[in-house]
Image 1 (cartoon, each protein chain N blue to C red):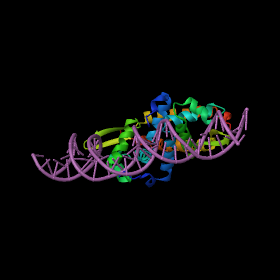
Image 2: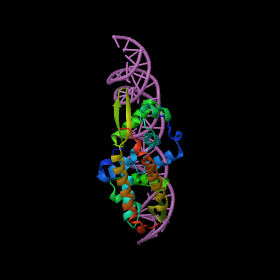
Image 3: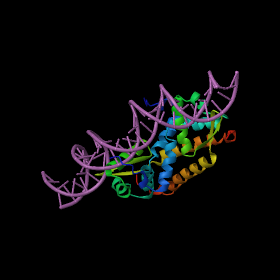
Image 4: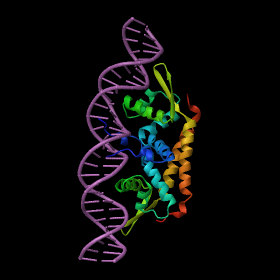
Length: 111
Length: 111
DNA sequence: TTTGTTTATCGTATAAAAACGATAAATCAA
DNA sequence: TTGATTTATCGTTTTTATACGATAAACAAA
């Protein structure tokens, strides 16, 4: 059992869920806050701040990158990450759009 | 290993992540859409629409309820669910607030 | 070239989520 | 009371996520 039924839902539902998923861990919320606040964006800086091992931080960064929320460039041995605002703003817009369309039917609630 | 570090983050980060988590599955997005659209809000109606077994739908409903996004009243053998707009609107506001405060530091990006 | 620094990846272990059949509980209808 | 209907919960299995040590890779500096 436990066969993934994820792709039996609409593309919109899958996309919205994927966006929510990448922000569903406090470490990844915290990383986004560090990336916004700091000028540096270096991975080691994040490791200093978060209560997690370097390997774990790197894994979270990879997920944020795969989802498109951040982008990174390698600078020698260091790697610089920052928020991809184009993607981030589009995804937030979609997320808010979903919420707005829910709200349109607000009066129909039964309880 | 894999000891949960979740509660080593700030309460705000945990709350935002918890909200994102409950919407991180397409089934739960779909349920919210059904609850907004339909007048009935009965569990069986959701089972009809989603490609999931009744037990699974009931489980997803429980998670949405635990997070406060929906509320339910029992009507005889049936149970009626609907969106708790007071909670939903507050959580969306918090989520957007986080995004806005990220955006305030937009100019500081390095890549 | 050698050494040190930084980060990504591999392998692995544990925890949590997802899914469902079976069943219990609650109520309505006959 | 009996039977049908509806939903929640239990128990279990499978999958995915989380976490980290160890190590490889890539480069800077000596």
